[in-house]
Length: 369
Image (tube, rainbow, N blue to C red):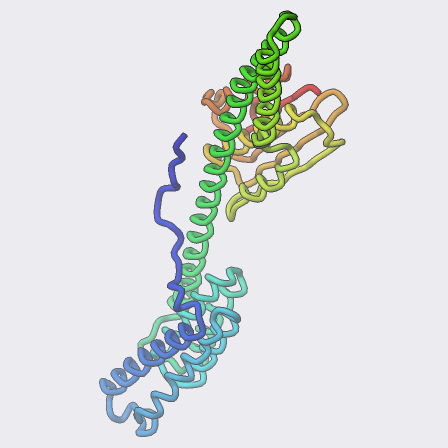
């Protein structure tokens, strides 16, 4: 069975070199060079009386550019601290191009440490910059400053969200692939056990029966039949020994829940009662819970999914409820729902699917012990 990979672009990854100390130094040096070039160009185009000799000195501009870019060395370990240091240098030094570095640093902080604190600091330092009066004439208004503060944070958070969602989709793909492979292995194991085991058992029984029924067998024929019976019994034992387990059990639901939880969806697991159940029911219950959860991930916009396993004296009740949209009518009966109904039916149980209050869908499987 083929599994389609998640569509769309994969998670954006920083080149490995840039995630090293040498990469940090290279990024910092590049930022300093950009600020230096823009600073010199700005002063070259300014009116002679508007810039004093000291401020126009290339060494002074170079030192200011290095000071603005230096905090970027800390951007991966202390992202917000690095952004605030860049902002403080821009406020203290009248170096207008340095604001680009500070804005980029706040975008990096939002990528590494998303939160309202980063947004507040990003907007706040621009307001302080305006109040301090170090902006050049004709700069943006306060409204523009707020937008300039929000923009890098929004960009950084969007990149972080895209990365998290792409990684979550990749984890789901890998988990689904492992599930399909495991089910195929289990199917092959059952086929080998049922077919080969049956024939080996028949061979052993027939050989033993011939030895008991036919009394006047030549010693050579009797030894041959004894060898056949013994070899078939040994082969049957070895086949059973090398075959893998038939599949996962209800105790493996924790791993399933962890893999299904993502940046925009929370999955919780609740257990009640004693988990001591027969192996067949244990495996079937896991598959029912897995398929119900997979349907939510594929077809629902739910942000919360509750999975409950209630071990009652007479049955195991598995419930999967979500808070997604409730469309009119019953959900379409795909192969997944048919498979769940078939598993429940074979165990003498029931499967109920209906709307969940106040929104979403609720799947309840009752599997008798």
